Image 1: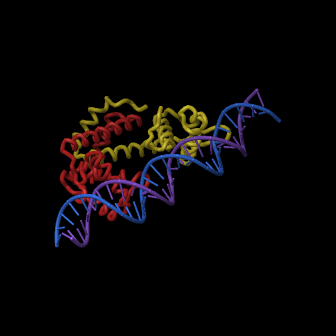
Image 2: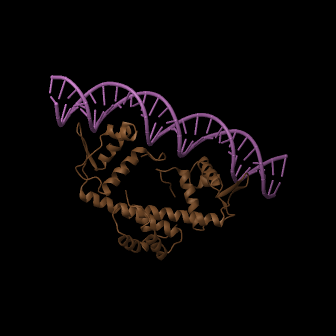
Image 3: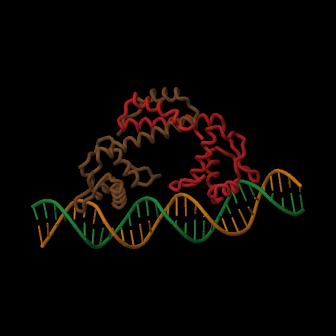
Length: 123
Length: 123
DNA sequence: TATAGTGCACTAACCCACCAATGCACCACC
DNA sequence: GGTGGTGCATTGGTGGGTTAGTGCACTATA
């Protein structure tokens, strides 16, 4: 697993965790990798992980206990709104993009159908 | 018009021009703003505009004639492929996103239909 | 020819995000 | 108490982006 060099690593770490939360891969109460472990495993500096975790805590996604580790604290309600917001954004930017490109609704619907199966399932 | 402070201005300038090309707002042969004019109008440093224009020339979108200005040179074929690529990307990332969120094809189609009219037309 | 408008090249400086290295403080557990 | 695992704080280095300033070459036009 490598990170996209064009965007900050700590943001990508956050996105990966968000995705894991959205897919249910991680649940409330789960302990996530320690900063050092994560750093070692993904060949990143511990400080970078530190920053990612700090921001995730500010977002209310996790809670850190000194000396113990970092744990998922996101509630189901939070998850639901996260899911909705993500979907809203994806939907809007997609429609906006296709409209500026001049596609009609019918054409877009067809394209979505055609490409739905081809697309790999979420990680 | 202000620029997003989180991303490089010169990249945003390029995107704006790309969008203008895709929507047909700008056509081959058109003269675009001079570097100095653009800089003055949008309150950016001339060097930043210079960089954007240089990269656009490297992309084959425009051609600059010393002492005369910068002109759109993109061909219809180029435009078509640009359009297709943009659509492909939008489609893929959208489908990927919705799949990871757990939506079914039917649900997504419905959502697209529901939101199509609401969405403002491309600029 | 003179002048104004264009793009081009170069240098310097500043700021900030990002990353790296290190040491410290705390907790759990033996 | 000691040890290992944890998070925390501080500092410094690096690079990219932006701004600034200057000068030059070219074109069009009066």
